[in-house]
Length: 213
Image 1 (cartoon, rainbow, N blue to C red):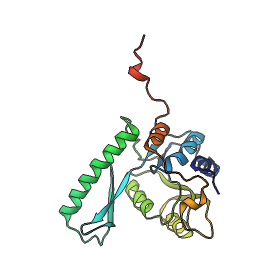
Image 2 (tube, rainbow, N blue to C red):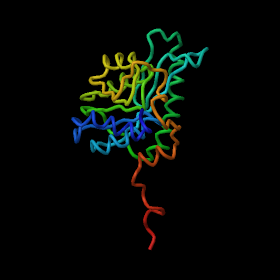
Image 3 (tube, rainbow, N blue to C red):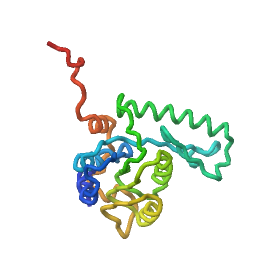
C-alpha cells in the first residue's frame, strides 16, 4: 500500500529511470495524477504539464460517453448515434471549459508541442482504462516519438488494455484483486486545485512583479 500519491510517485520513478533527461515531457491527469507525477518529473528532470480531456455525453444520456475531447484532439465512437451538429457544439463547449481549467492550472505557460517527444502520461491509478485509452488516441495525433503510460497501480484488465495501446505500460503494482484505486493508498484525500497549481508552478513570480524597492 502506498502512503500517499507522492509516495506512489517515488515508487513509480524507480521504474522509469531509463527516461531520465530524455527529450520528453510528463503529462499528469489532474487532479490526482499531479502529485504522483511531481516527484517523477523531478527525478527524471523532465517538464511537468497536464493533459486535460473530457467525455462527450450522449444527447439523451449524458453519463454515457460517445467520445472525448482534449484541447488539441478529439475521439468519437464509431457508434456515437448523435448528429454532427451536436458533436460539433459539444466539442466547442467542452474546449471552452478545458481552456479555463488549463489557464487556472498552468497560467500563461504554453503546452509543449508533443511532436517527436517521449510522452509519459501519469495518473494515480487505473480501474478501467477507458479514459486513458481515449487520451492516448488523441495524443497520437500530435505524432510523438513514444507514448508511455505510467501508473502506481492498475487492475489486470486495464493493464492489459493499456499495454496493447501504449508503446510502453509501466506499473508499480498490478494486484490480483482490485476494487478501486483508493484502496491501495493509506491517504487518498482529494487533491485541491491549489495543490495542483503549486506543483505545476513551483516558482511563481514575486508579488507585484518584483518591482518593489
